[in-house]
Length: 287
Image (cartoon, rainbow, N blue to C red; front, top):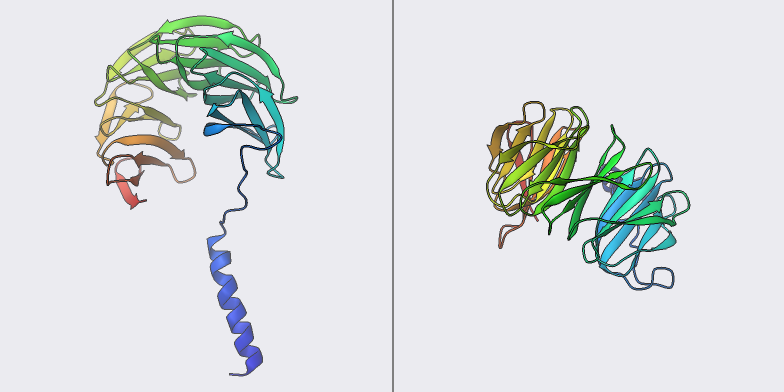
């Protein structure tokens, strides 16, 4: 083989793995700097697709900061309260909601100007948020007062408070049937809320401290991380199956394209991710 051909072969061999993977770490954005000041333990994300902006907040630091999705540059520091544990985007009115579990407040942020519109008093220890696209309402699960606060997406006022189970910990929204699901961590149940009337339709008993929920719109099913991954029928409000996805499922995510649910299993010496199809576990990946 000639030197020229050999060099071409080497170049192709080096490039092909890069092309085949097509994924890499583009950049890392430091949190403490002159714009953002001091944020410790970042733990909440929200994405604004209208403005292509990512919002980030942490347990320590009294603000939310905005990142330009195109340039990966921080563009705004938004003063809020401390202890931001959840963020949620209102796609109808282009607003971002930040739940502060130390202050029992939800901050409403303008998604265009990245400024605070108002602060709302909610229940004790607000822990999770979800957005009702049908009724344009935001739901806030208050882990310390066993209730869900409902916020009007237009007027930014509290509409009502819904009593649920002990320790509401996670929320998700079913757009097909206009229902909100609330995982009650300390009484092993999921409260199902009518998104129109804002009242509890029924309560489904699960096992083992439910702490995460995700909605699968293609199968109209809700997945609940508890002792295993419990699947709830979105129409009939009943458990269809329990999937042994590994010990202590902790966080869930849904892949719409391939119709799969991912479960992070968090327990000593068994850190893994389980990949779930509509009926069974497809793969468990150690991490």
